[in-house]
Image (cartoon, rainbow, N blue to C red; front, top):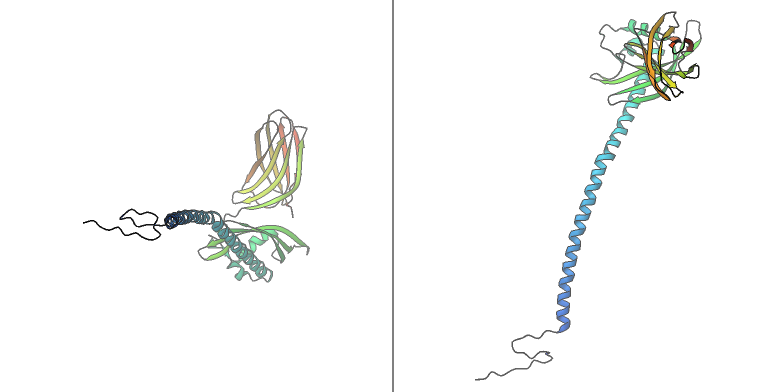
Length: 294
Protein backbone atom coordinates (compact mmCIF):
# COMPACT_ATOMS: atom_id res chain seq x y z
CA UNK A 1 0.00 0.00 0.00
CA UNK A 2 1.49 3.30 -1.03
CA UNK A 3 1.73 6.13 1.42
CA UNK A 4 0.41 9.41 0.28
CA UNK A 5 2.76 12.40 0.26
CA UNK A 6 1.48 15.47 1.95
CA UNK A 7 2.76 18.74 0.62
CA UNK A 8 3.73 21.41 3.11
CA UNK A 9 2.92 24.92 2.16
CA UNK A 10 5.81 27.36 1.68
CA UNK A 11 8.28 24.48 1.99
CA UNK A 12 11.37 24.97 -0.06
CA UNK A 13 12.44 21.35 -0.03
CA UNK A 14 9.98 18.55 -0.79
CA UNK A 15 12.11 15.64 0.43
CA UNK A 16 10.14 13.35 2.65
CA UNK A 17 11.10 13.15 6.29
CA UNK A 18 12.94 16.50 6.24
CA UNK A 19 11.59 19.42 8.21
CA UNK A 20 11.89 22.49 6.12
CA UNK A 21 13.91 25.27 7.66
CA UNK A 22 14.07 28.74 6.28
CA UNK A 23 17.54 29.97 5.21
CA UNK A 24 17.31 33.04 7.35
CA UNK A 25 16.42 30.98 10.42
CA UNK A 26 19.44 28.71 9.95
CA UNK A 27 21.66 31.67 9.48
CA UNK A 28 20.35 33.36 12.58
CA UNK A 29 20.88 30.21 14.62
CA UNK A 30 24.54 29.85 13.57
CA UNK A 31 25.26 33.53 14.06
CA UNK A 32 23.82 33.47 17.57
CA UNK A 33 26.13 30.60 18.55
CA UNK A 34 29.16 32.34 17.16
CA UNK A 35 28.24 35.55 18.95
CA UNK A 36 27.75 33.73 22.27
CA UNK A 37 31.11 31.99 21.93
CA UNK A 38 32.85 35.29 21.12
CA UNK A 39 31.37 36.99 24.18
CA UNK A 40 32.52 34.10 26.36
CA UNK A 41 36.08 34.26 25.02
CA UNK A 42 36.24 38.05 25.43
CA UNK A 43 35.01 37.94 29.03
CA UNK A 44 37.54 35.27 30.03
CA UNK A 45 40.47 37.17 28.49
CA UNK A 46 39.35 40.40 30.10
CA UNK A 47 39.20 38.78 33.53
CA UNK A 48 42.73 37.40 33.15
CA UNK A 49 44.03 40.77 31.95
CA UNK A 50 42.38 42.71 34.78
CA UNK A 51 43.59 40.18 37.33
CA UNK A 52 47.17 40.55 36.12
CA UNK A 53 46.96 44.35 36.27
CA UNK A 54 45.53 44.24 39.81
CA UNK A 55 48.28 41.89 40.98
CA UNK A 56 50.91 44.15 39.43
CA UNK A 57 49.47 47.22 41.16
CA UNK A 58 49.42 45.40 44.51
CA UNK A 59 53.04 44.33 44.06
CA UNK A 60 54.14 47.88 43.25
CA UNK A 61 52.23 49.33 46.21
CA UNK A 62 53.66 46.72 48.58
CA UNK A 63 57.20 47.20 47.26
CA UNK A 64 57.44 50.97 47.05
CA UNK A 65 54.50 52.90 48.48
CA UNK A 66 53.92 51.13 51.82
CA UNK A 67 57.60 51.26 52.92
CA UNK A 68 57.73 54.92 51.93
CA UNK A 69 54.66 55.71 54.00
CA UNK A 70 56.08 53.79 56.96
CA UNK A 71 59.41 55.61 56.59
CA UNK A 72 57.75 59.02 56.45
CA UNK A 73 55.64 58.27 59.49
CA UNK A 74 58.67 56.97 61.40
CA UNK A 75 60.74 60.03 60.51
CA UNK A 76 58.00 62.40 61.57
CA UNK A 77 57.59 60.48 64.80
CA UNK A 78 61.32 60.47 65.55
CA UNK A 79 61.72 64.15 64.76
CA UNK A 80 58.79 65.07 66.96
CA UNK A 81 60.09 62.94 69.84
CA UNK A 82 63.67 64.15 69.43
CA UNK A 83 62.77 67.82 69.29
CA UNK A 84 60.29 67.63 72.15
CA UNK A 85 62.70 65.86 74.51
CA UNK A 86 65.58 68.23 73.74
CA UNK A 87 63.22 71.20 74.15
CA UNK A 88 62.08 69.93 77.53
CA UNK A 89 65.69 69.27 78.53
CA UNK A 90 66.82 72.84 77.81
CA UNK A 91 63.73 74.38 79.39
CA UNK A 92 64.47 72.47 82.57
CA UNK A 93 68.14 73.53 82.47
CA UNK A 94 67.14 77.18 82.01
CA UNK A 95 65.00 76.92 85.14
CA UNK A 96 67.73 74.98 87.01
CA UNK A 97 65.43 71.97 87.45
CA UNK A 98 68.32 69.52 87.25
CA UNK A 99 66.54 66.62 88.95
CA UNK A 100 63.79 66.67 86.29
CA UNK A 101 66.36 67.12 83.49
CA UNK A 102 68.21 64.08 84.82
CA UNK A 103 65.10 61.94 84.24
CA UNK A 104 65.36 62.62 80.48
CA UNK A 105 68.92 61.21 80.30
CA UNK A 106 69.77 57.56 79.70
CA UNK A 107 73.24 56.37 80.69
CA UNK A 108 74.84 53.08 81.70
CA UNK A 109 76.62 54.87 84.56
CA UNK A 110 74.54 54.13 87.63
CA UNK A 111 76.43 56.84 89.54
CA UNK A 112 75.38 59.57 87.11
CA UNK A 113 73.78 62.26 89.27
CA UNK A 114 72.89 65.95 89.35
CA UNK A 115 76.52 66.74 90.11
CA UNK A 116 77.55 64.68 87.07
CA UNK A 117 75.13 66.66 84.91
CA UNK A 118 76.43 70.00 86.22
CA UNK A 119 80.05 68.90 85.72
CA UNK A 120 79.21 67.82 82.18
CA UNK A 121 77.76 71.26 81.42
CA UNK A 122 80.80 72.93 82.93
CA UNK A 123 83.21 70.84 80.86
CA UNK A 124 81.36 71.34 77.57
CA UNK A 125 80.14 74.93 77.92
CA UNK A 126 82.11 76.33 80.82
CA UNK A 127 78.80 77.41 82.36
CA UNK A 128 75.49 76.11 83.69
CA UNK A 129 73.69 79.38 82.95
CA UNK A 130 71.64 78.31 79.91
CA UNK A 131 69.60 81.15 78.39
CA UNK A 132 68.33 79.66 75.11
CA UNK A 133 68.76 77.16 72.30
CA UNK A 134 67.89 76.60 68.65
CA UNK A 135 67.38 73.25 66.90
CA UNK A 136 69.27 73.21 63.59
CA UNK A 137 68.13 69.84 62.23
CA UNK A 138 67.27 66.28 63.16
CA UNK A 139 69.09 63.32 61.63
CA UNK A 140 66.98 60.17 61.63
CA UNK A 141 68.03 56.58 62.28
CA UNK A 142 65.90 53.49 62.77
CA UNK A 143 65.61 53.71 66.55
CA UNK A 144 67.22 57.05 67.33
CA UNK A 145 67.46 60.70 66.36
CA UNK A 146 70.50 62.99 66.38
CA UNK A 147 69.32 66.50 67.29
CA UNK A 148 71.81 69.22 66.32
CA UNK A 149 71.41 72.46 68.27
CA UNK A 150 72.96 75.85 69.00
CA UNK A 151 73.07 76.48 72.76
CA UNK A 152 73.10 80.01 74.20
CA UNK A 153 74.69 80.48 77.62
CA UNK A 154 76.25 83.18 79.79
CA UNK A 155 79.98 82.73 80.41
CA UNK A 156 81.94 83.77 83.49
CA UNK A 157 82.38 87.33 82.18
CA UNK A 158 78.61 87.78 81.81
CA UNK A 159 78.73 87.58 78.00
CA UNK A 160 76.18 85.54 76.08
CA UNK A 161 77.96 82.87 74.03
CA UNK A 162 76.73 80.28 71.55
CA UNK A 163 78.01 76.78 70.88
CA UNK A 164 77.00 73.81 68.73
CA UNK A 165 75.87 70.69 70.53
CA UNK A 166 74.41 67.40 69.32
CA UNK A 167 72.14 65.07 71.28
CA UNK A 168 71.30 61.45 70.60
CA UNK A 169 67.69 60.64 71.47
CA UNK A 170 67.22 56.86 71.57
CA UNK A 171 64.33 54.45 72.01
CA UNK A 172 65.33 52.74 75.24
CA UNK A 173 63.45 50.13 77.32
CA UNK A 174 62.39 53.04 79.53
CA UNK A 175 61.14 55.09 76.61
CA UNK A 176 62.71 57.77 74.41
CA UNK A 177 65.57 59.47 76.25
CA UNK A 178 68.72 61.45 75.64
CA UNK A 179 71.72 59.15 75.72
CA UNK A 180 75.25 60.29 76.49
CA UNK A 181 77.01 56.92 76.09
CA UNK A 182 79.03 56.47 72.93
CA UNK A 183 77.61 59.57 71.30
CA UNK A 184 79.53 60.80 68.28
CA UNK A 185 79.26 64.54 67.73
CA UNK A 186 80.09 65.93 64.32
CA UNK A 187 80.60 69.62 63.60
CA UNK A 188 81.48 71.40 60.38
CA UNK A 189 84.53 73.66 60.56
CA UNK A 190 85.08 77.07 59.11
CA UNK A 191 86.96 76.79 55.77
CA UNK A 192 90.69 76.56 56.45
CA UNK A 193 93.17 75.52 53.73
CA UNK A 194 96.91 74.83 53.88
CA UNK A 195 98.72 75.02 50.52
CA UNK A 196 102.08 73.29 50.20
CA UNK A 197 103.85 74.70 47.13
CA UNK A 198 101.97 73.97 43.94
CA UNK A 199 101.73 70.27 44.71
CA UNK A 200 98.86 69.71 47.09
CA UNK A 201 96.42 71.26 49.55
CA UNK A 202 95.07 70.11 52.91
CA UNK A 203 91.67 71.39 53.98
CA UNK A 204 90.09 71.01 57.43
CA UNK A 205 86.50 69.85 56.93
CA UNK A 206 84.98 68.50 60.12
CA UNK A 207 85.68 67.74 63.76
CA UNK A 208 84.25 64.65 65.42
CA UNK A 209 83.97 63.98 69.15
CA UNK A 210 83.76 60.32 70.11
CA UNK A 211 84.57 58.05 73.04
CA UNK A 212 88.12 57.45 71.73
CA UNK A 213 88.96 61.15 71.50
CA UNK A 214 88.82 63.87 68.85
CA UNK A 215 88.96 63.08 65.15
CA UNK A 216 89.85 65.65 62.51
CA UNK A 217 88.54 65.04 59.00
CA UNK A 218 90.76 66.42 56.27
CA UNK A 219 90.59 66.67 52.51
CA UNK A 220 93.94 66.08 50.80
CA UNK A 221 94.20 67.17 47.18
CA UNK A 222 97.06 66.57 44.76
CA UNK A 223 96.93 68.82 41.73
CA UNK A 224 100.00 67.47 39.97
CA UNK A 225 100.47 64.59 37.54
CA UNK A 226 102.95 62.79 39.77
CA UNK A 227 102.51 60.83 42.97
CA UNK A 228 104.60 61.32 46.09
CA UNK A 229 104.73 60.35 49.75
CA UNK A 230 103.52 62.63 52.53
CA UNK A 231 105.39 62.21 55.79
CA UNK A 232 104.69 64.60 58.64
CA UNK A 233 102.84 65.33 61.85
CA UNK A 234 99.76 67.27 62.92
CA UNK A 235 99.71 69.02 66.29
CA UNK A 236 96.32 69.95 67.71
CA UNK A 237 96.56 72.85 70.15
CA UNK A 238 93.72 73.13 72.66
CA UNK A 239 92.21 76.30 74.12
CA UNK A 240 93.35 75.24 77.62
CA UNK A 241 97.01 75.09 76.49
CA UNK A 242 97.34 71.31 76.07
CA UNK A 243 98.57 69.73 72.82
CA UNK A 244 98.04 66.41 71.08
CA UNK A 245 100.07 65.06 68.15
CA UNK A 246 99.49 62.42 65.50
CA UNK A 247 101.61 61.41 62.49
CA UNK A 248 100.31 61.72 58.95
CA UNK A 249 101.69 59.23 56.44
CA UNK A 250 100.06 58.62 53.11
CA UNK A 251 100.79 58.26 49.41
CA UNK A 252 99.27 60.78 47.05
CA UNK A 253 98.41 59.63 43.55
CA UNK A 254 98.35 62.09 40.69
CA UNK A 255 95.29 64.32 40.28
CA UNK A 256 93.46 62.95 43.29
CA UNK A 257 91.27 64.33 46.08
CA UNK A 258 90.16 62.24 49.07
CA UNK A 259 89.25 62.40 52.75
CA UNK A 260 91.73 61.54 55.50
CA UNK A 261 91.02 61.04 59.21
CA UNK A 262 93.39 61.93 62.06
CA UNK A 263 92.31 60.53 65.44
CA UNK A 264 93.83 62.12 68.54
CA UNK A 265 93.25 59.38 71.09
CA UNK A 266 92.43 60.41 74.63
CA UNK A 267 91.96 64.05 73.68
CA UNK A 268 89.10 66.24 74.87
CA UNK A 269 88.25 69.90 75.09
CA UNK A 270 88.13 72.61 72.46
CA UNK A 271 90.90 72.77 69.81
CA UNK A 272 91.81 76.16 68.35
CA UNK A 273 94.78 75.35 66.08
CA UNK A 274 96.05 72.57 63.87
CA UNK A 275 99.75 72.83 63.08
CA UNK A 276 100.63 70.72 60.03
CA UNK A 277 104.32 69.92 59.58
CA UNK A 278 105.23 68.19 56.33
CA UNK A 279 108.82 66.90 56.12
CA UNK A 280 108.34 65.06 52.83
CA UNK A 281 108.49 65.96 50.01
CA UNK A 282 109.42 69.39 51.43
CA UNK A 283 109.94 70.76 54.93
CA UNK A 284 106.98 73.06 55.37
CA UNK A 285 104.77 74.06 58.28
CA UNK A 286 101.28 75.49 58.12
CA UNK A 287 99.06 76.62 61.00
CA UNK A 288 95.30 76.43 60.54
CA UNK A 289 92.58 77.72 62.82
CA UNK A 290 90.09 75.13 64.09
CA UNK A 291 86.76 76.89 64.45
CA UNK A 292 83.35 75.27 64.52
CA UNK A 293 80.96 76.68 61.92
CA UNK A 294 77.93 78.32 63.51
